[in-house]
Amino acid sequence: MYCEKPLTYNVHEAVELVKEVRKADRVFQVGSQQRSSKEFRIAAELVRNGVLGRVDSIHVSFGDPAKPYTLPAEVMEPGLDWDRWCGPGPLVAYNPSLSPRGIHNNYPDWRLTWEFGGGMITDWGAHHIDISQWALNADASGPVEVRAPQNWATAKRGAQLVYADGTVLTHVRGKGVSFYGTEGVCHVNRGKFELIMDGKTVHKFWDKETDKGTSMEREVTLTEREFLADAKVKLYNSKSHFEDFITCVRSRQRPICDVEVGARSAIACHVMNFAYRYGANAKWNPAKNKFASGGSSKWLTRDTYRGGWVV
Image 1 (cartoon, rainbow, N blue to C red):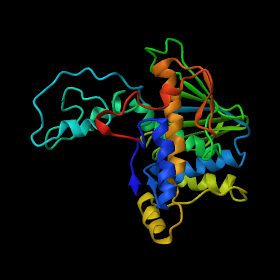
Image 2 (cartoon, rainbow, N blue to C red):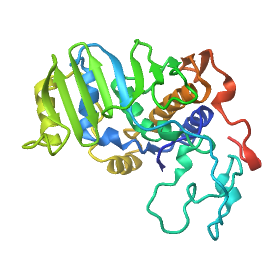
Image 3 (cartoon, rainbow, N blue to C red):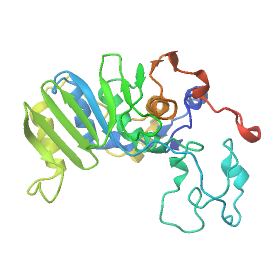
Image 4 (cartoon, helix red, strand yellow):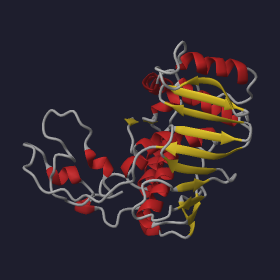
């Protein structure tokens, strides 16, 4: 199976999904394709090998948390079983922003609602938080604390996740994923890379208009040669996310973003969403995927799974 994000709607579903995939012994690739891009792998290796020193702060940049669905009813798309489309979620009024009519050129906005998605936290956040956890060697764990921003009910940035080693990940308006260490800083985004050591930019391709005469591939390759030639930690090197999936279907090995890795990243996104939706300042137990203190078990699943749906 190959599954795009958001992988699950809530924490409970993520936990159950991993159980079922393991029980069935299937190959499951999550569409966190940034793991198969060289710039993200090298950024994570810089962190894992201590090139940046002690990384105690990570900034992740993506859009807003979800909002309640409030759009008015419109004429239904012909042939659409709206009750089935809403599935276990609430049966809301049909609007083409959720499920567009016919041929369209926009992304369906169900992802931006609390009823069906998790906003950009579980959308783009699923990508950037995933890379952060890869760099922190947290693929088998996750955050241990969530902190809500001030004015959390209206805030669009500022939620934080704290990891066991004290690293604080903050949702910001920034450059993609930014790792701040005692010896250096690395900013990385799709097709973009910047390494700063001792306050000086040493390798950079961020804007083709200003960074002329070079390329992202060149700057990342030079970084690898200069700073990672003798690296003790070498991460899974996938050249193509889809090819990696097909290769693993044949070999029966776990792919670069196996279901459990993807589930851990999704859970971290859900935990961050607790800060925006409920104002959570809470301790989290990643081993049990439950609150250690300060949160409610009700937040981990739906109040009700409608229409006979069960997870």
